[in-house]
Length: 415
Picture 1 (cartoon, rainbow, N blue to C red):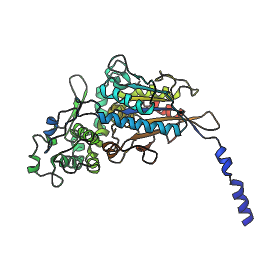
Picture 2: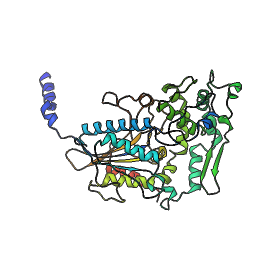
Picture 3: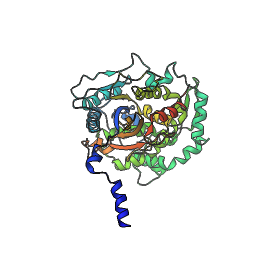
């Protein structure tokens, strides 16, 4: 019996040298769909201060611009990508074979340039952009390519809210209370009426409304959804390293807890699949063609770039979350709300060739720096990498074959 067992073990044993010589799957192309880096608040400190008990910090750049720290952080992230994909065998030493495309705004173009400084240092790395706005890769519904269907969008968002936006907003009340307690520096959650009196405006002042405006565009507001712009400004100021003079509880853990209600709003407004279908079908089709190029399959749209190893698309939070909604991708990184598009974070689409045949598969991840990694500009290394989550499309398993990825995607696209 022992002899037979030993023979079976020996038959299945592969010497280390032979195992090392076995062919490995090969990474052939990467597409990164990313959000711009840390920017200044879109609203003034005075406008934000109407909702808080303490004054807001001031950014050193105009509203909505990439900050100096934001550029440094994205360059650090680019350096990590460079080291990571050199280790994976995709990039050679001093490889310049990367293509950059950005939406036509200061923060997206500056983000692409900052990423290039880390990913392809010393290379001539032009940042490409559309000749005029709007760019259909980022704003397809604003072009004749994808006219919005307002009634269908309204129906889908109402269904995502469970049929009643008032009831949806009520379910977000605990998260809203946590966020309000941070803004008003309340002693406990929920805030008392006296504590709410510290601010000129409260989240509860926002009406609950879901409908179409005179132009047929979706309009959705509620107290919980009002958190979005304020939360983004809070996150950006913290990540930029600004000082919150007089505030208590300004740390990554507290901010992360307060941002949970923001994640619920993202799920409703941008990750509803029909929202992604109407906004991101053109982007998804171009992305698919980019992955398919050179894989021996018919390409149904124009690929992005020429034949680069890495293609970077620098857009906005909606670029990431609406595409994720179309594909049915979910993630939750430590310190962020569920499905939140962090500054500089990106959806990573990797095209791999299987060893021993011509088959290809797609591997997806979401990668972003943590709040404290950004605030304290912590170096990104193999031992201390950015945060990462493995993703799986709603219609396909992990390491989805290219054919299955394409087939599932085609069923979700707008005509």
